[in-house]
Image 1 (cartoon, rainbow, N blue to C red):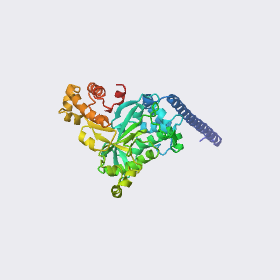
Image 2 (image 1 turned 90 degrees about the horizontal axis):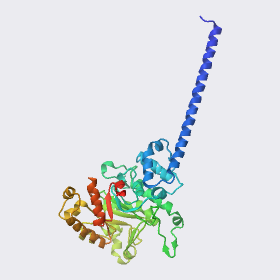
Image 3 (image 1 turned 180 degrees about the vertical axis):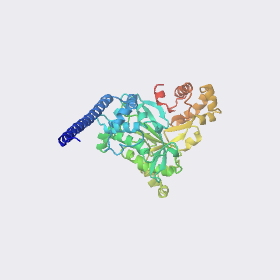
Image 4 (image 1 turned 90 degrees about the vertical axis):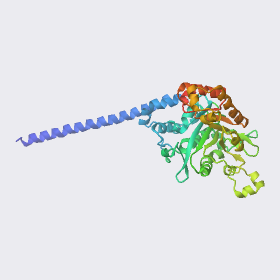
Length: 416
């Protein structure tokens, strides 16, 4: 047995050694924390430096390549913004936060500066892209599409191709389209908005659009009605989603008195299962229908003699096209037109291009739409093989004078 004084000495030495060890561990932990903080700051500075001046496809590619660094460090997190945490996807959330949290440059400038506008392209099923709306704008595409469903007891419009993939909390028309567009337009039109829509030389000021290189270029937004109750869908779209745009004069409209189209930064076109009755489109009650004099003075959904939503008229049904309200767009599927021309998609795919007879037949429908002042769009054109697709793109543009080439491949069409 060891003497007491030796035991006491050993115990004191143990206490001293343990104290030194804990001190080193604490110092090492503090060093790691400081290092981590420094690394985060350096990442933030590097990302912000790299993003200076980036726009369009270069901006899109930067986020895709550097997503792990950006997301892991929450470089652009902005929890004060009402839609900052959208939970659409990791890429979308990071990019969304970048647009809304960083205020050195306007959102429109970040997205479309130095971008070549492609006025003849429609982004088909745009909401399927990794960055709905934003990606099309960064490619300079001037027409996008969103399929909408009534959800949340008919109080909300969710964006989805079919009911199986509806996410009424995150993938809504407001989250993906109307809110970002309203923010962008408010930003570039701030002086006009603050002056409560003043006038210049007796004329109403034209609002600026979402393309940095040409603020007069309108963006066409096709809203595809999917729900059975199209009247309720229309009512909700007008009263909840489009009303702020109308109040700020951001929408293209049809003047019901002069029968002219007045273009604005955003042009709304309804497609799919939309209502066609004029009383529904213009919210006409029975009493107004009976009083012709008052009705003439108070047309339109908001009683301002304007119609703010246009119908996607049938390109292949000329008789029906003539009976529906005036519009700006007519569309048909590739198969529908080929059927009218006694042909089929199978024959075109085997051949690899449209024949002279098919082109001549297609032109009769497109010419009719032009007479009605309608842009023409053909959807469902084969996208594979790419050699056939490229030939059909070329024929649509050069031979048929189609106004909007409908495609899923924005990268391909931008390099065409």
